[in-house]
Length: 231
Image (cartoon, rainbow, N blue to C red; front, side, top):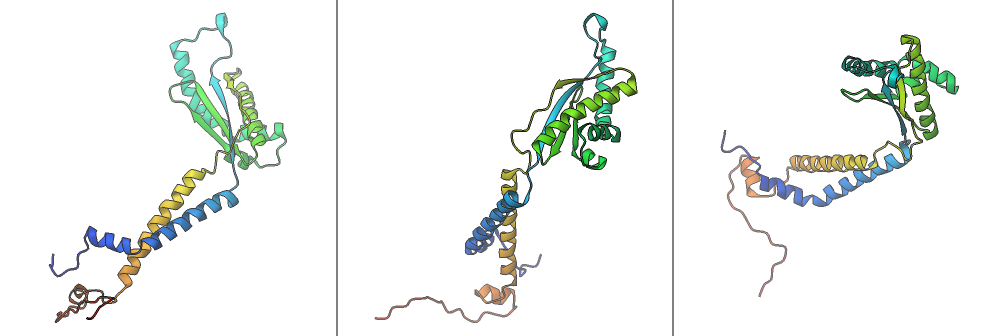
């Protein structure tokens, strides 16, 4: 590497940042405030309601004794029923029973399924801007899945374990996360702008600038002081 090539060490970088620290703080605060304003006033809150179902034969006690093979079969069926819950058939049944003024595609976009690995449990969630709608649709989705299961298998293996409740608060937006993102973006943007301005600034600041940037010899350096006193 050419020894005349300009190198910037950590000390130089820190001096640049310290010199423009006010700009960095202002830009970071502004970006954080903009993120908060956008979150509070322009992002509509969404509510999520979840119903938990158990995949197993509805007969219990002396009527049936589940073997290890049965349990393994039901565990494998959990993933299958997670896909059935998002199917057009289930969405149409939900729409018909609740008389929703929505398309099937819109309903499917609101559905989230969460199989619990190696268990017979399946969580079905509905996300909506209306908390009551999310609650009603989640419970109806479980009932619709039971109905479809009976049609497909001739028996009901979908048992509702925990019905959905009306959401107490919004699931999104995540205000703290959005503020944190705004803060980080503001910090990164401000630091980038500071270094860009420093890179574009070609004014002579010290003798090293003349020798490194202009490739000219420095004949003399006159010290500068803002205040001089004379006797």
